Length: 470
Image (cartoon, rainbow, N blue to C red; front, side, top):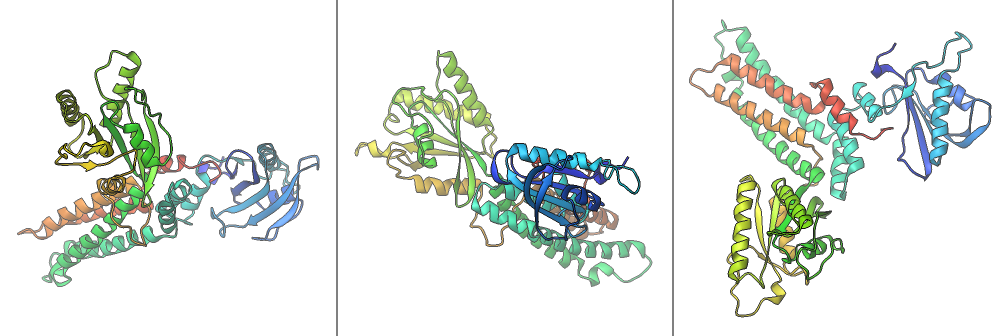
């Protein structure tokens, strides 16, 4: 039995549902006999051929285009056959079943099945084959899924740059510089009897400083790329009737949440993803925070606190028309105290003062926070810019690439090891063996980004998130 990574695989490569065109894809070594069985004749490589797709009895299932890509010049690096038919789910299932059935047809020469181990592909297995066959590296493979899942134009363009290898090239540049520095250190360790100070003559200190500077730039762009992909979770919180649902509707530009003068209208969270300058922000409207005897409302309030505790940023909304009253001030102060207790210190809380359009002229303005009106839109532009600042967004450079949280974490680990290496190198009596170990660990973390140094568990997690047929 062949290993899983060498089994021929087949799957429907287009999204579920009806469409004008649907694709069934097969990948594996030695597909030429299967191509003849399915198409009734050999196909010219990389040339679309219009023909009928027939079942085992010779009856036409459909008519469409067949394309054959002999390996290694294919997406997966193996032989690939694509059958493009009409996009009905029944037609595609029949074609897929025909592929699996034809694979069991006896070869006239040997009497054995053409492809006895052809099976249904697992999620992401075609792209995993491309990675294992060195068609793309791991960062590029992840960029394929990110391009498919992109929720904004900026994210799609950045994912396309990563797929083209922009991110990988920067990682390779860092790795090559790190390998050269490791070579100098290893030479000093291997030839201690030499009186030549390899590290000082080669300006190892300067090389390490340049490496750290380059890494800082890559890390900054990776953090921006991860922000484009992931966005941040922003929770709107406050007392009932402060205008939380109105603010969500205003930011989303649609009537998503019910707005009434009745306190406690919102009983559960309402979520919408918006984009500001291409950055996705996941805005969550929650139940008004207060003591309530209503069981359903209490459940909604507890859920609100759960969302607040897991937020990346909190918009604490205050009602300007009620803020001068002592009872309202006391309730706001109690909410603020509870937030401080439940939220990590790193999570920002932005004070928003709503209903500025109803503010009496004699009422003093708050000393801090943003004045706005969810009804008229006043102050929303200022809020949007504040949200970008809370997210940590900076004006995106044209060459920005997409990145994931694991990439950013790996780059942080590289930075930590290079910091430790600098301390060793600049010490009074450098411990070269420790310096070499820090550089080795830094290189391993860099290689984990592109997949040159990775575990099977990591690959399983990454590719299992892909869609079947990709």
